[in-house]
Image 1 (cartoon, rainbow, N blue to C red):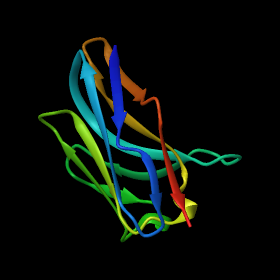
Image 2: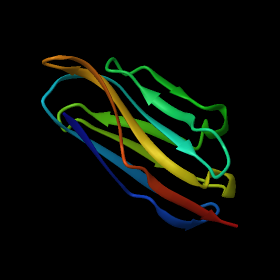
Image 3: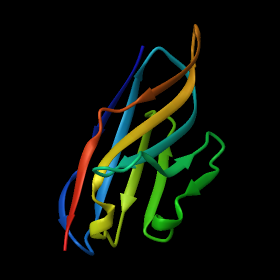
Length: 119
């Protein structure tokens, strides 16, 4: 079993910043991709950013230049630094981790953390 614990969401005014963290624990052999997704009310879950084991990064066009994803491989933790937040960034943010355990590959989701940006 792999558990993900997210933290860092909250309420912030437009233009402000927040930093999300997601720590993975359990019988992990290796972690490949770590990413963040978000889901706003009435909308589908969408990719925000993903970072591979080798450091390759992809961002949604809507967050490029404002959000930065990073990871600490020793701590099995992924971060999302969100700057210049806009009301349209309001959503529940979920981390996603893909890797290997002794029995095979896994994909795990965090419990979600609410980010609310007021105008």
